[in-house]
Image 1: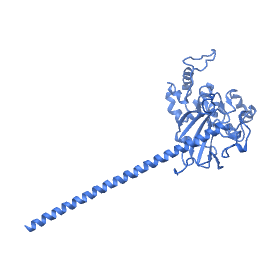
Image 2: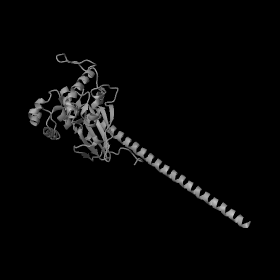
Image 3: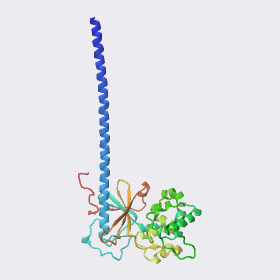
Image 4: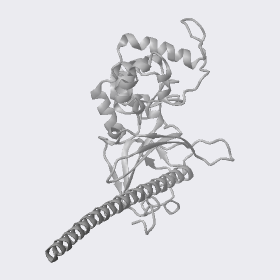
Length: 346
């Protein structure tokens, strides 16, 4: 009897021990899951904090750039406009060049002391689909890989689309455009353009085409645009880019010296010496890629509105942040170079 009671007590102790072990194991798993959840939640909160801070910094830098360009009549493309005032050393923020001076808009980066870099791009550096010579658009499409036999139907459909269904035949008076393109991507609504959308977008369609620009700016246009649209030889384009980096091209004889016989093939009204009033602005931290391209117009005729208008924001593919142009580093303190976000964010 005593032996049976001892055996029963031992079995009960063993059962209790097994239960305790299982309980501890379950609690260990619960605690481990809770720790893992807390760590992941903390990582998520930190990622959201970094994204929010990055957004604050980008918006801060964009606001400073736009305000300074609009209020100080910053001129671009290596030239001053007739409205530019004389430089005043004491009246400008020292982190940027004085009023009437130059900021590059040909795609080169300009970096300041707070770790932010910006790129200003002249919208007239891209070929306008709504105002350019059809021959230039045809040359651009062929240069980007569209077969020659497919280009003519594309141009005809584009012309009909822009003129509200009216087609301008040879010998008839020119029909003005009735429809304004809102984006170079709008052409892919047309049936003859749709098969080539993937190809053209992959090869940088939005980097070479634009809308609502009367002329191409020779002082800011990219090499690909000059080669494809106007058929300028690559070696002549290289010389042109080197010269315009030193001083603007403002006279026809400058083109004659650079391009020789190829200068005769350029349209007389097809190139502009001054940049567009619409700038494309890209911002990026020095340790990261540019995410967006902001299109801002600095020509406002309505006194009730600010002197600038946001037109659109485009998400950039990963490859467009790479540039072969030299980077300009400017370390002078001032509004642009000041810290972008105050503590305790950092």
